[in-house]
Length: 462
Image (tube, rainbow, N blue to C red; front, side):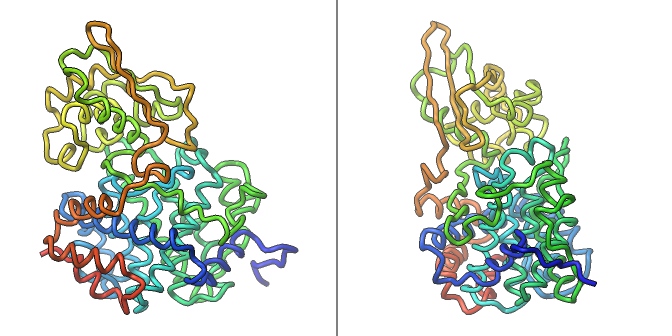
């Protein structure tokens, strides 16, 4: 008896597995390869920075107790752990600061689970840089496609797309690096349907930081089981009790299918980098606030309005008291009131603004108290994350700036110099400037590297 029936046409998981295993590096468009290297550099810098914070050290301490092994390296500490454990730690570090990239249409943090999976699996298997880069692109593309097929719907039901879709993405990449056959990778993807998990009931916890790590860990675990012969269902995506039916109560088909136009249309080109270490929904507002800054005296402000699409009010605009006076740094990262106030007052929205400067700065809080969230009927969310700031002064004068999409998105991309500047600012919180420079050179030329060992050795903090 087999769990793999013989349908008249391939299932989505069979098509995705074929893409993951047979994608030729030379068939990947240059813009996709260039984006992948920049985003890998970006997420490595974020993980290094995270390793210097308490939550990063706690994550590493916790993962360390799960088992002994020396297959793969943990970013920051440099210690060797079993591959699945290293993937868990590195995925957590990648998302700890909420500074990692987002596929706008899918509302999916693509690089964190992908990086965690390919570095651990690639190092464990002795893969070359070219092999790892291709697997990373596979993970980016598959994760973005799975999230885009349920655009906006997973968040609406309390699920975190990164946690769910990232599991399948990690398995696809790890399956490729582990040399799985097609049937085995289909089984691994099927197993991921029961391993993919992540709800957004966060409160004051660190829960969301866990999600990319758990996705990578689960993906590697699914691959290990499938490699040993453990069978998974081949209808995990379109089945009546499958991923989409259970999570969004609708199975995407046709052009919305996650396997549609594989290798022809690259969803990964829709991934946006973050110039600011806060929720991506806030970036358009930060851009607008920075544009308006300096056109008036802050003491003259009477009221600040931020139009926001209704779905996002409970995520970044309410409850008002929590947004105006966030009790934790993480609450501040999800407050349009706080982010706009910081941008107007300091002219910068960076890690220092949230982690080094006092969270209860009276000037920031006083300005945040003037921010009011209103409806935004013009929003095209989730196609874009627009941001608008309307300022009314005490003398009645008004100033307004709207950004239809934010800096770092495909429409307004960061330059290579800006990407590198962000990387160096993050990485040098954990390693020296010279090491960061060598690391950047290795990542941006990853296809030439014979192995990952020199790259990961540079990710060890002194």
